[in-house]
Amino acid sequence: MNNNKNPECVYCNSTETGFFLKNNAFSYFKCKDCNLVFLFPQSSEKHTLFSNKRMYGERNKIVEYFKREKYYQGVSSRIIKQIKKYQKKGKLLDVGSSYGLFLNEARRAGFDVFGVEKEKEATDYSKKRFNLKIFNNYFENLKGGQYDIVSFIDVLEHLPNLKLVLAKTKKLLKSDGILFIQCPNLQSLVFKLTKEKWNWLLPNVHLYHFSIKSLKKVLEENGFRVLSVKTYDNVSEFAYNLIDVLGIKKVPQNFLKKLFWKSLRIFFLVILQLSFVWSYFGYGGSINIIAKKNNH
Image 1: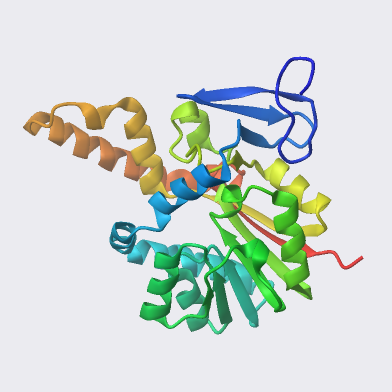
Image 2 (image 1 turned 60 degrees about the vertical axis):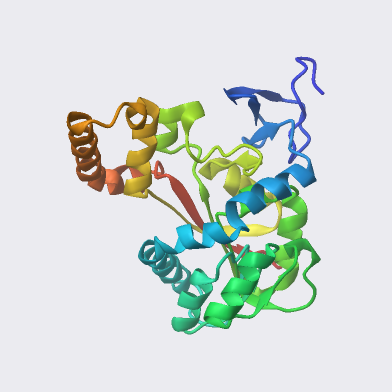
């Protein structure tokens, strides 16, 4: 602990931390050395596992997920297009592979695909539906294998030990292998507008949050060279987050209120077509980063 009674950084152990924001009973602090924002106190492993399972490992979540199958296929195609700029083929390992949709799209694009997923329900589903090679295990416990690409798609912020995870990633990557990460962007426009009501805070599930600066620093300190950084916004999620903050969903749903709600949603969806402008300057809701491991 430092002199101000603030917690040490959960990543770099610096005592130079300061209060960042509060979300209900949860507090977040920011490290002045590495710029990482982290939840404190960190959830117990048991609590985190329970929270993750409720969000990703129950059968009803599978039904909800595949209601947006076309959207997730579009996201997968965009990610694969980015990866192919640096690695056109080879063995791809997706960490936290969930229900297998991304891996199925990557296989269609010509990659030899593998996944690691700790939730048995998700593992079983992706094997049955897509006939994928999925290891039902923790990433840190994975043995053997050398991969051309390792991907973390909205997963890295869930994993408690960044240094251990990145060391394992380096070990699994071939000498010319690349790492792809997608995660929520703490410097995004939607976060600046919503703050403690940001939908992607997700206490007990997201243990920390990255800006471009902090993610690049973490990668470089752990033996990776950043090749590409982009941000992008999901227009619908942006609109719904703003609408949640305004509290419009909570008003009585008579005809006029419903008309107002639909009109506002349409307005947001039209205006947010301009999201490519602020995303270009690094303020999109998600960070997409590609890095290559240093071999010296």
